[in-house]
Amino acid sequence: MKTKKVLIVTILIGLVTSAGLKAQESYSNTIGVRLGETSGLTYKHISPTNRAFEAILGYSPDALSITTLAEQYLHTGLSGFSLYFGLGGHVALLTNKYYYHFYENGRYCIVHHEGSVGVGADGMLGVEFKVPVLPFAFSLELKPYMELNTNKTFYVNLDPGLGLKFAF
Image 1: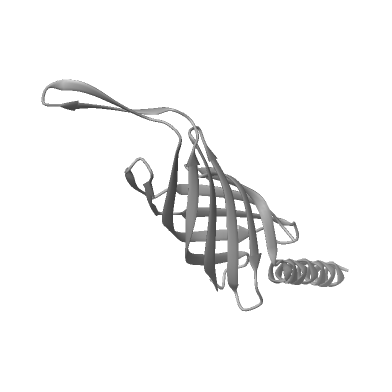
Image 2: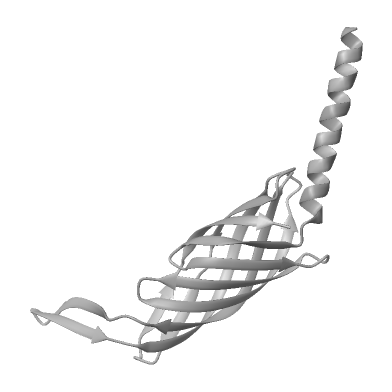
């Protein structure tokens, strides 16, 4: 009787594990949210060759942006975990007033900017965990970028983020 129970439990674990591996391998799209400096909605399509296209519709208190990235996925050998890296670009519309406060020659200065457009280059380096059996994926990533805007301001930032996605 005990051997029969062990055999049944072993078969069930094998079925659940193989179903989890199949579910992880079978998803080719994710849609969700990215939380970070560039927070917003994200969509990613992963091809059978482990290349991916990602689009991020970003929002911050003073800007709206669209970022597109071409990425490469690397399987780690750990169930559900993948690494990815890539390059892309973005366009940002700076919508609100924002101020820079600084001291120059012993004087307090305020610089005011309003309504500009920025373009930039983006990188991507991340790790993704696809939950076996469930259609959810989580990611931790760095999205470093450089941006030049029409106010002649240049930005460089690492932009770490957390992704919460529905995988299908």
